[in-house]
Image 1 (cartoon, rainbow over the protein chains, first blue to last red):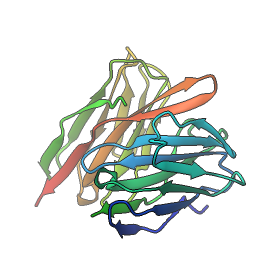
Image 2 (image 1 turned 135 degrees about the vertical axis):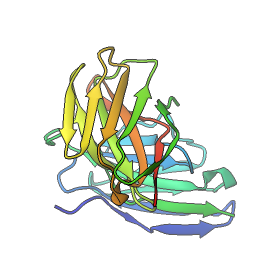
Image 3 (image 1 turned 180 degrees about the vertical axis):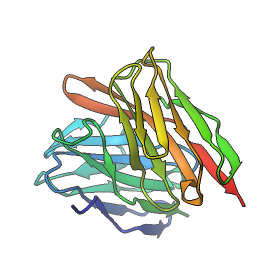
Length: 116
Length: 113
């Protein structure tokens, strides 16, 4: 079974530029999550989708961050405009209600964003 | 947002030693998960715990769900070089069918040659 796919793996941009990240979850996983992981910290949830609907975006800085999951499968996360403090690894995860480990989330390799 | 407290923050051990780390929270969780993250990769699930007091093993790894539901610990026996990495605990809460995972601050494990 293929894991969570993310692209690009690395991105370097200047502040005030825009950037977008893509995620394809594990096949059949209805729930998709975007996390931000700042160096030296654990992942922090940005947004959670159930199929193509948003379940929780309370921690998403909506003035600059947006995310969509139009067909209930893959998802994009966008930052516009980027700030220096957005430098982090952006992780995508997915989960399934029928998993062998209920509640467990499975992570992609992440996109490392550097804002100069 | 909340992050769970993990200790120690970092550990320097020799190959073959046993390792113990723990995770504490001010609030109760329904499920505890332990993940390992290698450099440049996403966290990988190691162990899942679903019941207060539960003790679960996965090879050389053993984890326990605290009786108070506010803590968990992870033990690694006879450490080997591939155990190097950052270990994260994560607590899961379910509210009206919405599952939310809160991560700990991480424990970095280094093996001294």
